[in-house]
Length: 95
Image (cartoon, rainbow, N blue to C red):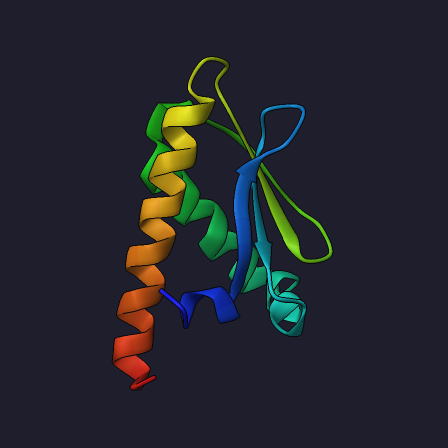
């Protein structure tokens, strides 16, 4: 889990109940690559299914809007998938 914190600062709900994923500032440039944006959107849609509403990408944050009433459940899904995905990627690259 400690090596995951090198990449992700936090995952939480904001005051508008959007899911916020904050990446470490040294990786923020990856968020602005068009292929990466499409990959993130597809991954969010695959995890959230019909609950997915919208994805917005800021400086070093992804804001995911989900259907009202599903925010907490989907926050847990996003956290779980991020941990699994990053752990897999880190094993793959030998970190």
